[in-house]
Length: 159
Image (cartoon, rainbow, N blue to C red):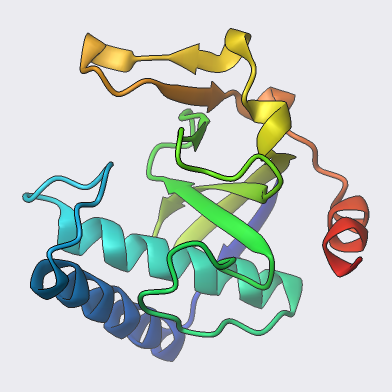
């Protein structure tokens, strides 16, 4: 596990991207599967901040992208952030089995990078759950099951 914190200006930049993403979502009529009307602003800003934090830690370019839904968040990496450190990595039905998902926890400006997993390895029956029986099952992978070999990850995405 690695820790990373954003500076004031990095946090401002990430917040602007998150706000832009939420405005595009509202005006574009996009339906965010995991984002409720009462927390969309927060989740978009936290998501953008986590992406920036991973890019900072990995010394990789972060594109500040908006409306690039299936592209990687940081290069080819998909960033997933949960605010509680005890929460699992979430991979959803619409996610690509070939993508690499990085699990981060915390709230801006401070994050922990917990580990990573390729989508197909997360999409196993043992991880499939529907917390609260809301009719929205997904795969929930505990941090202990994630890979933390960052050299292997960066090699895999450079091919």
